[in-house]
Each structure stands twice: as structure tokens, then as C-alpha cells.
Amino acid sequence: MDRAAPEIDQNRFEELVGDALDDVPPELLDLLDNVVFLVQDDPPEDDPDLLGVYEGYALTERGWDYSAVLPDRIVLYRNPILRICATEQDVVDEVAVTVVHEIAHHFGIDDARLHELGWD
Image 1: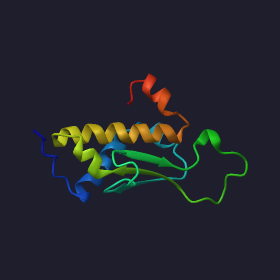
Image 2: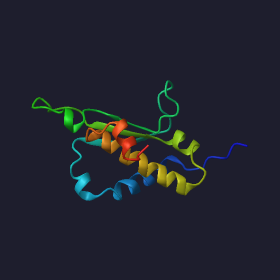
Image 3: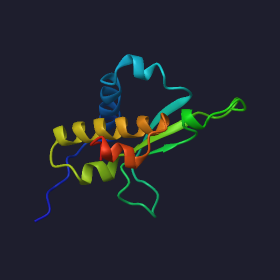
């Protein structure tokens, strides 16, 4: 039997993302450079289970010529996160993990290293 996904609208989901960011240590947030956080309902059609994505140039890839560029984007996808969660607390926890995961990509940490660290 399929479980019903929690009903969390866009505004509430954005609040949960904000709460997750509030829980990131300030000294880490201070190191984020030229990044915006966005919420979208659905990921690209070719990856329907994607929970979040980092789009941009990791700090480890930026060189002397990095300037006057649009902000990097961290996007969390609401519907796939809701589909894998049974309760609002599950959503809170998954949003927090996804935020940390995507911030890690900004710092140049890849999926393999995140897996080694238990963030998968």
C-alpha cells in the first residue's frame, strides 16, 4: 500500500528550507559565495527522483577569471522530497540533509565523498 505524501505547500516548504539554512553553522554560511537557494516543484523530466541540485562553479573550481557571473543556484525539488517522506518531520529532516548535500557541492565535495561521510 502506498503511503500518502505529506501535504506541504510551496510557502511552507520554503520556510523549511529557510529553517534548514538557519541550522547551518554561521561560519559555514559566511563562506558561501555568490549562491542563491530556490525551490521548484519538480526536477527535469529526465531525472524525476532528483531531490536537489547545485548548479554553478564550486569554490575549488574558481580561478582568477571568476567575476561578474550570475549566482550559483541550489535548487530543492519539493515533490520528489514529499514523495519519499511519510510525515512533516521526515520532510524537515530530508530538506536539512539535501541543503547540506548541495552546500557541500558548492565547496567542491563530490557525491562519493559525501557517501563516505554518510550524507547520502
